[in-house]
Image (cartoon, rainbow, N blue to C red; front, side):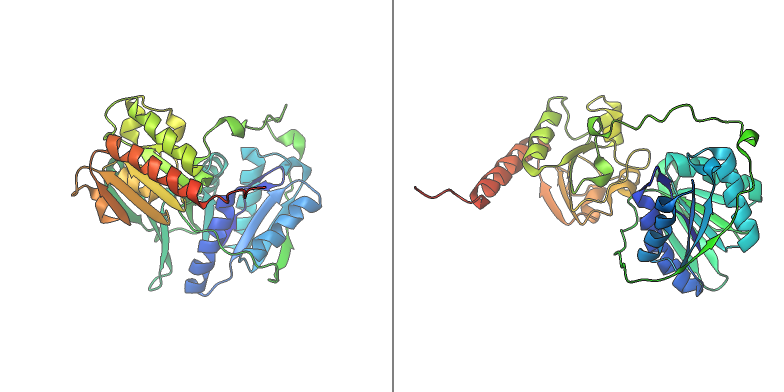
Length: 339
């Protein structure tokens, strides 16, 4: 069982450790070793990622270092990962469903002439025939299906960030590193890196990593009702999310969409105001520790999987909830005594 460790200039995408955690469970079911796979430029920082993979649950790590691999480019990374698979023959290979992971997984699967299940929200093992069970939404998100690859190996899947829990890090774990050369010269690579411009993350909603999310849907009928969510979010230190219907109605920008075609979140608290809870939205937020639904329809689908439900008009209940949190937070603050 292999997990590709995605990184950019030394920074690992958290989905890689989430997949190491899930991969540990799957490898134990198969009674095989779990391996991380790290490709990158030469130098100690890249090698340290192998240690991190082991600390998060891997038994070993395959390492391919070459200056050609300093920045992600499809051609050398595809050759490197495909060569490793051909040489060491894993049963399954997991990657994050990120911009890089989606690009790499498709080309590697094509090179290896094997199957690939994309954008999975669940993984399991059928121990009767050792097949990987890859779960993902289908038919526009209205159904969940399980896809099985019975004829080719390795079995490949990409998994959306934040749908798997983050494993505990244990720096007492020990494993070994297997190095393998790339064997590709820079002048053989058709794509060249001219410059590296990092995303201006501070200017974008960071829904995927928020501990608290307040989201609104079609039930917030007027555009100004979304301002109520921002008021509540400020009290909680939360990010504001939205359903697809709210985004399509131009209530908020697309970067705030939660669901199958938006972001996947895994916060400690998720407040859904005026969201029905269709499966398209559910797959993006059902991993939250606590879900609070605010809806005037007590039979809405979201009521089936929420921890708490407030029945009523979201436009009226959200301000009341904001005031309740404001009062509770103010009461919890220590008061300065008289001097």
